[in-house]
Image (tube, rainbow, N blue to C red; front, side, top):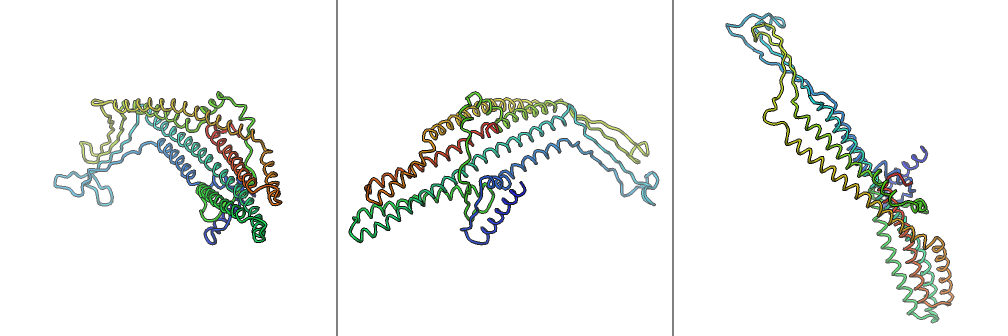
Length: 430
């Protein structure tokens, strides 16, 4: 594990140094696992989300603290008059006529307000954790989908460049044949037009690759300079058999039990319940206990007295805030119920969409791609030996490239849709 993490860090550091100091053509070749490790460590949104959890936990700590006592010192006279009574010195020769009063007060919260506030903040911390989990899941979907898109564009680039190279070899031979008068120039120009068309398609694929690169570098928190290349030769396997064995009821149950977004909204209802309990407790006035010392300000020279103060709930008993908290609670419950239905529907739809893609992929079959490759080689040789016409060759070439695009797009769509389903049902799928 240490060796693996070390290789990730070294590769990233080398890439960063190259991107800052050298050429934009510098390349970082990285596997899917290494890229995801960097993403989890450096994604700025995840780092900010973790700080939100820390903030919420800090509020729990603050809620557990008792209110500070209040210390007051007053009635100090800096001079005396003819009627001043001798009280005795305080410090050295000073203080024989000095008067001073010292009071200390402590607020005592009643009706369990402190515990209720702690419950509110603890629920807020739990909501922050669920929100972070939802953020992590959604960013993983985006990140893995962009990795699949990067793989798609890399593979398409290879396919189109290979076909372009074959076409250029044919063009070189055709150019000599045209010069010798064995082949019409119109056929040569038709092949040349196909070459230009392929170059245009490759440029478009390169732009798509650039979009995926930009998104991945942002998600990974690495510099935008340089080239990111996915080292993996294949996309990860999808457990199609397990997905096909699922039923709508199971998907709905998983989604409602393991959706981080739904859990956060349901905790919002709990948060509102604690708020209502706290507002009801506010009907009970708090107590303020006090103790005071007065030197020379009363009939006693050194007077010590105790006191208690309490608000009289005469004009209001917090009725407005209680009613507002009741409304928030009802809103939270309705939103939770609505989100529960929405989550179930979205999960089932994601599962059905995934089944459709799996069915399409299985219908085509793995052998189809290999057969098309063999046919391309055969068509290329047949055309080079003039056994088939230019039109037949170009028609097959177009069909071959369209098929490769469909197969690669299906694999990309399959992985992206699988990650979408995982977002809804959590860790129930591998």
